[in-house]
Image 1 (cartoon, rainbow, N blue to C red):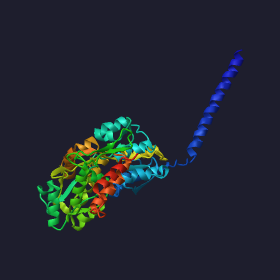
Image 2 (image 1 turned 180 degrees about the horizontal axis):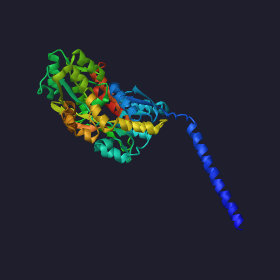
Image 3 (image 1 turned 135 degrees about the horizontal axis):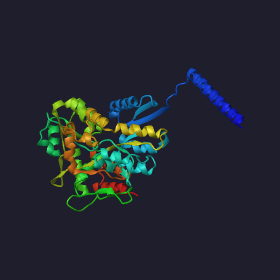
Image 4 (image 1 turned 90 degrees about the horizontal axis):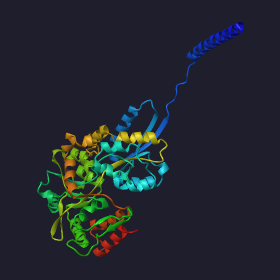
Length: 416
């Protein structure tokens, strides 16, 4: 019995010895093997944004690649895509659309309903960093669907102090007189219904979304009351025939500033840097003026809103796309956006900085905010209003009855 136990112990010791030798040999072999380095995953992302943001966005993309260097093989391309048309272009081909994109907040509901956006996972963190009005703008049915980028998607008046005084810019009559006297122009884009809202917004005439969240109600053709639709139409015709007025797109407005033909215009903070480069210390920025309508002065209204960053639900790299979207909208890059583009931040820390408080453009936007309305309009609002306003800008060359035009516009806006 004792001999058997001894033999078993001997076998066990030999086994342990040989196994240990085997481990040493395996370790030696492993040390002598040249392991192939693991290639980082290739990540291809496309980012859409405004043309004016090209330099800024490319700088932000570069810093993102530096931040995550070595974690992936990044191929990130910035492409110009107008923010106002982003929704239509994206829905036209979601799988071919950008992974990350900038868009106006009024497009959020449609994009979410179309399945173009996934809910944001770190919603509470995003809420804690941004102004309440901007987190409201990215929310649908208590879910966040995008990242707030700016809180300044509105418009106000720019003017050249060399040609008009603070008193003159209080009224559109004063602005037009000063412009015409100097053979210059005041411009506003009447091809865009976004700006045309200015004339109707504070008149008691109404427009907005029905309870279905899709269709609109509109009373801009009302034929009774203190201010009728036809009163507004006639006021627009009087403005259009003034030699100091021109209906110009945003691009044409800037071109006019640069060539000296334009001394005042309605635009937003996105153009402040470009305008200041031309007008220098003569650049003025204030709330919109009043305009003459039915024998009284009506304060011009405005739509307000914010710009957002969305992540395409069909992105091949959703996690990296979300990281990039959050990077674009973080505190550091919102501060950079203000410094390079004078755009008002949604980030609370940046919004409360002294630099923001001293910005003429942001101050003008805040002044105008008293007369602004959050843009909540269904898709059928835009074309009928633009058609009507463009005809007013042309002076109603066909002579068509104004009430009939107003009725046709409202019918189009309210269509189901």
